[in-house]
Every structure is written in C-alpha cells, then in structure tokens.
Image 1 (spheres, rainbow, N blue to C red):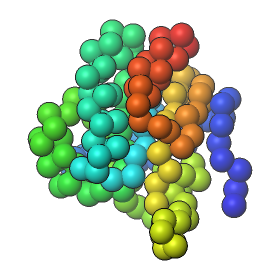
Image 2 (image 1 turned 180 degrees about the horizontal axis):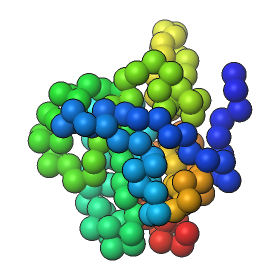
Image 3 (image 1 turned 180 degrees about the vertical axis):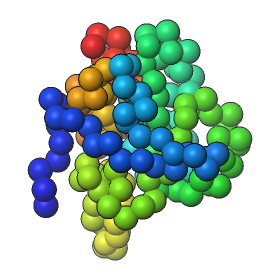
Image 4 (image 1 turned 90 degrees about the horizontal axis):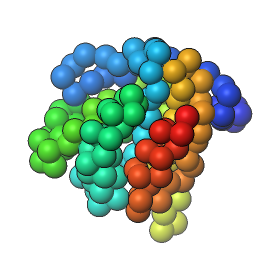
Length: 157
C-alpha cells in the first residue's frame, strides 16, 4: 500500500461527479480553503448526522471563506435524494470511479464487520489550504461535534 498523503502534501486533483451531473475537483477551489469530508454511505445514521452538522455550519464556513465538499461512493441520483430528504446545504460529490480520489488517498480500504470482509470508506476529513496543500487530516472520524472542530481548525488556518 502506498503512503497516505498527509499535512504538507498536495491534495490529489481527481475529478468527481456532482449530483447535477457536472464534475468537481480540488483545483476548482484554488485560492480558497476547502474541507473535503468523506463518509461511507448516504442515509445511514452517522453519515446523515455528519452531513446535517456540516450543512448547519455552512454559513459559518462561508463567512470564514472555506468551501465544503462531502464525498461518498453513492451515485449522483442517491446524492440528489439524500440532499432533498435532509435539506442538505453542503455540496456532495460521487467518488464511484475505480482509482478515484478515495483510492488515491488510501481511505477506500478493506474493512471487517461481524466477521465479514468488504471494501468501504474510512470516514476521513481533509482541510486543504488555499494553495491546495493538506493542512490537517481527521482520520476515522467520530461524528459527534466533528463539524464544529473542523470549523475551528479552518478558521485558525
């Protein structure tokens, strides 16, 4: 396995699909700070809470000049339904391509649950500076109060 990118490294510039059918990548946010939060699956309890928390704080992220982007392997259609169901404000992207962004970051990985082995997303958040470098990484995120902690770190950057 390759070394996972960390603070000081350039954030990979790999395009992902938006729910509207467009594409988005880190370089689209050049010159501003960006938070990319990866989560396992739309409409699951922890992922829903995380997305609602980031959405609730979006005005504060905006005021601090920080863009948000939530990412999972779910399809654009699933993202549209997830956004509508929970009135989400943080933009989402689909990282469904093989060798996509989560693969490049090493966070699409083998997981084990109840004796079953499968591929899954490790809940991870990246704070990226205005130059496109990783400023901070939250690995194996616990959802409670996470969005607030990320906001504080983004403001301090």
